[in-house]
Length: 141
Image (cartoon, rainbow, N blue to C red; front, side, top):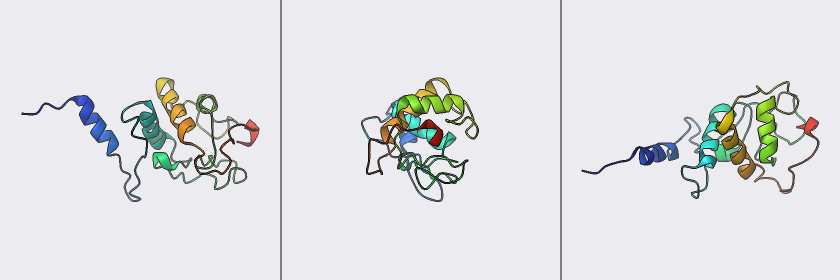
């Protein structure tokens, strides 16, 4: 008889997260099979994917801007093409984005917010030719 630990079962369940319809999977490096980055990716998928796009979280936000600038005021940034620092992500999560008008404040809180921020900071901007695009004017975010 083989004894299975709850941690192993959780890991297997987490790694098998598949979205229906598209068949996309959350893709996080194997170096973090059950750590905060993977947990952040799952939380991002659950809480942020309605407005934001980030392939690593299998997230195709229906309202995510196709370009880094422009689009409607309510479009969430496309994080495939936009880098963010962990601090900026935490600020946005705590304050409803940078304008405070369109993103729900505290959509993810506490340690979960830190996990999402760590994940976004690590995986955002991988499809942009200028990987230094992490700063800029917060009013244009």
